[in-house]
Length: 471
Ligand code: PNW
Image (cartoon, rainbow, N blue to C red; front, side, top):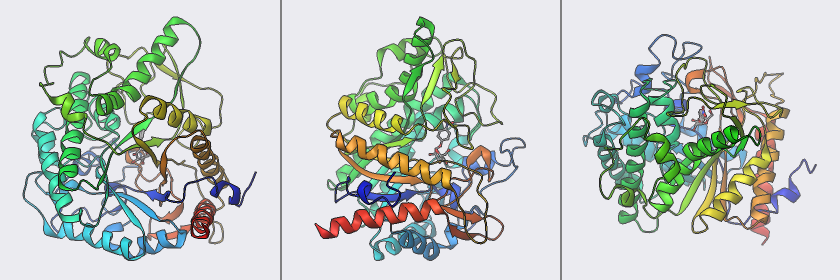
């Protein structure tokens, strides 16, 4: 193995975006500062039993008060890109058109600080922090939420679009819809399978409306949607396992790509979902709206799933706090081990699955560019004399960057790779018990220490970027 990454770095195009990713609620803290409104996560974390360690994002890793420190860290790692998300209620405290200028100023300052160091910002508009006022009015199962999102997208783009050219509308609508409204392990913690399908539709409608608004305002903008993909393998060749694989692949992967890129939900899954919904929430023209021109498909990849039809598992990676099924109309499916090594989340490590998903997406949707916008692993790190020797994460990143190179070799138009995450942070229902960072954070003090994985990744990126300068 080429541990210094010289040969690996040379396999990527010169324009490649090398980055790391975060999201607002997971890193910002300052939830009561400068006029920020409340989001569904602020409410959810206060309900007993929702977060394993009883923690919340009130302080998180205090990125709201630490623009200079975070940007210095990204620069020290040598990255040329940074993906972060906007807190909707920080910008629109009530979820309507009333703007909080201080909220916008924070993101404007962050963008300026990044650009001053030559770091390209990639903005995610929605990474799960819905304004609580909109949840009070019904949340994502209501069509009005999608219309409010389009308004927010316009406000954000108007303020930042002169400097920001990369826009991801919605991050992982599968999680927001099915972990938020079916299994209840994420905010708002509802357990209503039929409503979760309406939620998924309105998240896609929100995407379509925002994508069109941004493109109309700036034809040069790169517009994207972030989806979490898993290659799905059947546990056996039995008809019931093969059917489970079709269903999981359909709900997890095809449901969203077919809507966004082909303007139609996959027929077989529509049939399955008819058991619990009449789809009355779909209006004429919605699928056309959702099928907005897309420049890049953002791929979040962590693991591969092996599924059975004799299951009953709640979700492949269920939080211990969630009890409902994240698989509406598919409660009979289950997830089994393929015998691979796992991360601290229990997620199986399979770098070849990333090459598999990238080549498949390119074969199905050859017209769209691809970016890996999240990839990473949780491990129980320890500070050891001021260093963190996270060899398992280092190997995880190495293996998955190599899997990206394999996809590039196979002709996949891959434009970037973003590690999840820049730094340890608030891992949703797992609180602060799972560390995904390239940078270690002492949560009590906020002190940051670059891990060995971060050092390795930074070296790789520096090599890739110097290859580019040598060209
Ligand atoms: C993604 N699941 O979340 C998110 O985009 C990040 O905010 C998060 O920190 C990261 O992956 C690591 O978890 C997911 O249960 C959460 O299948 C849960 C699932 C998938 C993705």
